[in-house]
Image (cartoon, rainbow, N blue to C red; front, side):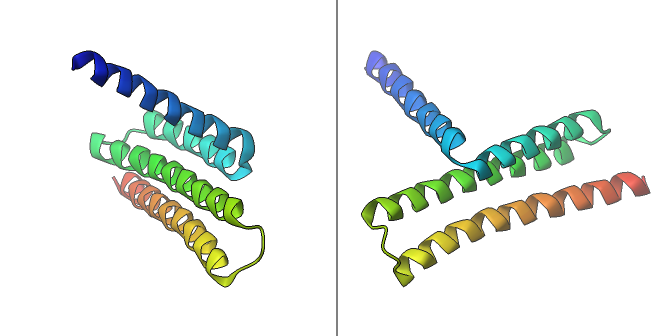
Length: 121
């Protein structure tokens, strides 16, 4: 039973890594968000932030990456089904893109609040 658990965990990790690697290779937006998150993480670790503030901006950055992965998955699935333009396909892609934008705005708002608090301290 324990061996099965570990084997499945290893497979899940391999599949997840394959998804990240494929998205990195094929999606410019994902690469941009990764670099933005590396900069954001460096700032979060360098600036004198509290543990909660640091965790907030780091986690929101990771959520942006997760949203971009979902966006890519939806776009790829829609494109696999048909390359013809269909209003529902367009709405699905637009909604996925909007999810990335909403998480990015949330991360930006968190940074703004943290920086204002830092400046007023």
